[in-house]
Amino acid sequence: MASSPKPRILFATNSERGQCGVFFATMDALLHSNPDVELHFASFPSLEGETRAISEKATGSNPDIKPIMFHALEGPTHTEAVIKRLTLKYGEDFALPPPTLTRPLDISTTMAAIGDIIGALLGWEGPQFMTVYNSFDAVIKSVVPDLIILDALLSPAITAAWNSGTRFSYLCPNALKDAVASYQPLDILWNYPALMTGYDYPLRWFQRPINIFHHFHTLYRVLYNSDVAATRQYVQEQTGRPMRILLGKANALPDFVRIFVGSLPELDFPLKSHSRVVACGPIIQDVPAVAESDPKLSSWLSNGPTIYVNLGSLFIFTEESATELAKGLNLVLDQLDRRKPNAPRSQVLWKLSSKSGDTTLTASNPRICEAFCGKIEDGRVRIVKWLQTPPLAVLRSGSIVCAVHHGGASSYHETVLVEHLGIGRKGSRSRQPLFEAAELSEALVDVISGEKSELMRSKARELADICKRYGDGPQNAAQGILALATETTAAADKEESIATAEKKVTV
Image: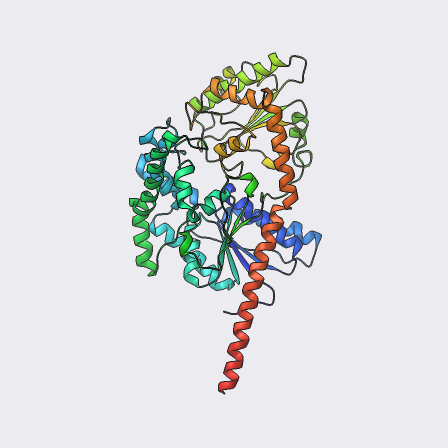
């Protein structure tokens, strides 16, 4: 394979914010620290504008920087593929999340939810999969990269990378546990909560048998889920090669593969790491302050301590769930007022996602207004569909006293992990994965002004200091990827030199 004097790196990711964020942060770091590197980025068309903006900002500060070359992937996005797959199962009225993720947990719900999640992790059906696969395969052949950096949820690109013979690695926003689990399966089976069980860490002794059952059930669904099996067979028939999904089996990955993870051992469960797993620290793109991006929001945030609620764009509220959350938040504000009557009044910033086309779930919804008892009209509660300010900027504003989120990687890896580290609480136990107003309000008040609230804040500051000691997460990922690409380029140059010398000898 021909190689360039400077490494040529091809990144490929889904367009969902929880996945693409670490890619933008890492590419931005690479641009500024290594102007000569040649970067290519393959994703779905919606990310082209943001890619161009990052390049223009970088080249504006240093004209020697080469802009990122964007390559639009064809076919449905991961979210579109998931919605289509689940719509076929649940009917045309389906909206995320699936019903199995909105019922109180028990053994049967956990089993059903695992089935939906495994199908969703793959996403694409056979023909859809091959559309994305062929599109990325064409990008590989056009770019001829020295190294491909992959999103672990972009299965068509993973499969194409395996089949291309080009060296590849992964870049993940997830917890270290997700990357190292397959290297210590017995420890995972015995000590760590299985998917969708709702169990706390560490497990109690009587939970272990059913927890082990759910781990094996998850493995069974990965191997024999009918939707996954149908796609696997279709891809095999079309390519003559196996379909590859997620990070694959630990012992099946080529030796050159590395997994760059946006976490640190101190931010994770107590697991042994592995030589191929590179802990970079939080990989988050730097953002302008709220005062720069949204002066009006900055002014409002300065009014008082703020509870920031953002459950992610994939958590779609119904009127019932939005009203229940509003009741819980209203209880929190009332209790904080009673506890600290002379302190600045607390307020709520809530990014509320509803079903596409639904214009009723807003700050003017009668049931939501009633639940907040006039606090929306008083300006203490701000409900928005979208924030032009990135979440990191909101969190850095100095006004946020508590962040309420769904436990995903872009917010924090898992709610269980947050409790294990001592920096927060589960907002729901009796109704998880949903919530109940009184229980949620109790957890929030405990975090903000409870007996252990200062200890939680101290622990959060301690973890922040640890992150600083490890250095900048995007730079750590960027330099690790650059070193891997440079190593690959050097190896290719050596092979080419040997081949040239042998050819001369033969002649």
